[in-house]
Every structure is written in C-alpha cells, then in structure tokens.
Image (cartoon, rainbow, N blue to C red; front, side, top):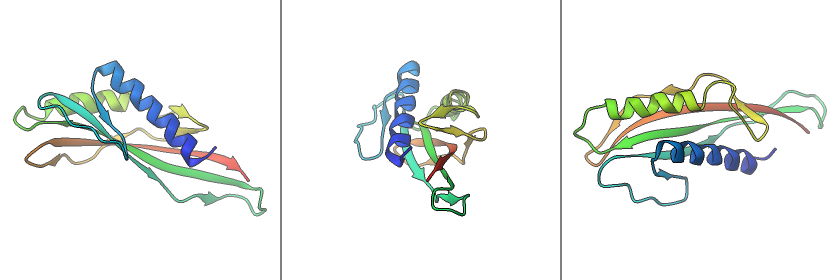
Length: 134
C-alpha cells in the first residue's frame, strides 16, 4: 500500500459518488470551472504522519490521513442545498468504508460552513487509517 494507491482508490470512490448524485467534482491538481448555477464537489487530500508500531525495521506501521470532500454552491439559496449533500457524503463514506488496504475509522463530520462572495462550502472530513508491514 502506498500513498499514491490510497489516494487513487479514494479519488475513484469520490468519482463514483459524484457521478451517482450527478455533480461535477474538482480534484487536487486538476482544474474545474464551477457551474454558474447548481452545486459541485471539491476534494482535498491530507495524508498524515506514519506511526511506527514495531520495534524491528519490518514491524507494522500505521498509515493515516483524511480526505475532505466539500459540497459547494453559489450563495443565495440557503444552506439546505449544502447540508443535503453533506448528509449524502457522510452516508457514502461511512465508518468501515475500505479502499486500498485502509478504511474509514470513524464517522465523517462536517466542519463550519465557509462563505465567500462566489461560493459556499460545506467541508466533510473523511478520516482513514490502515496498517502496513515493513
């Protein structure tokens, strides 16, 4: 299991989710022109510090991090547009969701709403972790 494999698998799940609910999605390093109306998703990726759980060089290590999938939309329609999407994100990436040898280890959660003149964002944090030997 590598950081690249973990991200690639997670981004694949995000793509399937976005297609299922009919929303475009931006990914780190890839541009997306947000729609003039309606909603879209934005993915951010945060691998984290590896924890060593073995004394020997071949002992297990805990890989961990989180993806943040934000429901985004234009201002003026109230927040229910975003909260409806965040409910779907939380359900789709529930505790126990597995990908590339890691799994979501606690229920995803919504952070504070971020507002600017062009968009409103509802970030959902999806934490993952998994053990690897060596």
